[in-house]
Image 1: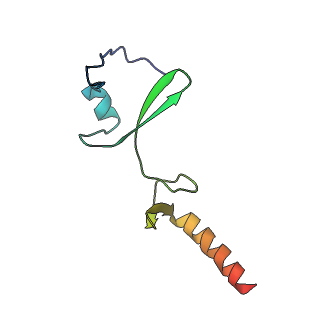
Image 2 (image 1 turned 120 degrees about the vertical axis):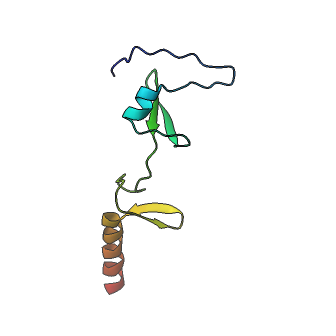
Length: 87
């Protein structure tokens, strides 16, 4: 990880302001969802991107029963279903 040299304090409600330079660099706008996770002793913020529940792909997604699946995984599942029906 690379240090930016920017330091922010946590306010009384637990909020931290992300500097505009970082928001611009990662194309983070107001109301964008951020994913928060822990990596060892670090807290990581990442712009949330919807992804396929099977492979993690973020392109060509289709919703099925409130879950996202990419075209490639949908084709594989379709192939599995077709081979089961033939047996």
